[in-house]
Length: 307
Image 1: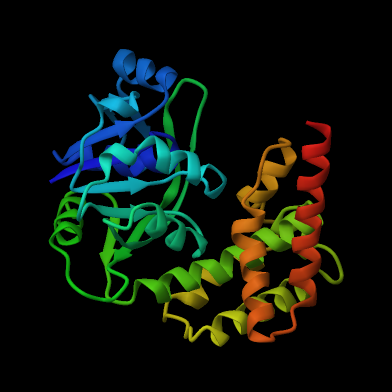
Image 2: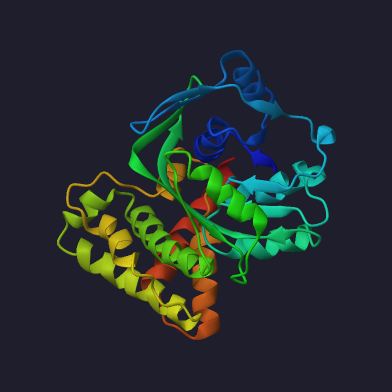
């Protein structure tokens, strides 16, 4: 199976690198500067689960792409449209596209752009970053992938992907209810992104205030209500996922807040905006979510005016 991974940053570099480590036929589509780094120094992973320095195939010319069996997308939602145009040559009739993006709004966008492809569902659970020298640094031991066909059916490519990951430190689960797992993360992430972006503070700092825990629980309850209106029932793992929202002293911030702090674009529309739109369609009252969404939208307006 020929696999194209879009990007070799924190998520794409780690999960794509583990596939390379296991002997899979993987090509990374990257920008020219990243391609030079990979050619000169290889793909380096630092992790308590085992480091690696790998020879990685990389291309940066969209015209050099031909259809792959599986395309893995790990970009941010605000880069998705550009990314899809860039790798269009890699998607042929029947190509499987496996996005590890947050939320749900991207699924229809990908299916509309590539009607000849099969769009799978996926969730990535990892804390990692790309440091200045091009090294992918993995924090802690959590590095879990959940993926599956959205209709719950079988697919040989996904089965092979799971088999390859079984030879690596990655915990990869091929499931028949992937959209339930995606909703688990969507509820968690909308809560985390909403509250930390609204307060411009870490989970620990919010919990250190008199009303912090109550406001986190209010926002969480709103997001859960929206999800339930969409037919979601939480998975058995959901309470464990939620535990990160209530760790006192935690320095955890959503990547959305980190994007705000560096004055960059955010996934506000893709995460908070989409959750709020679903709430309104379902007639669910979500006052805290609306405030958080408006806060991030106001930031985006000010950023566009100043930039």
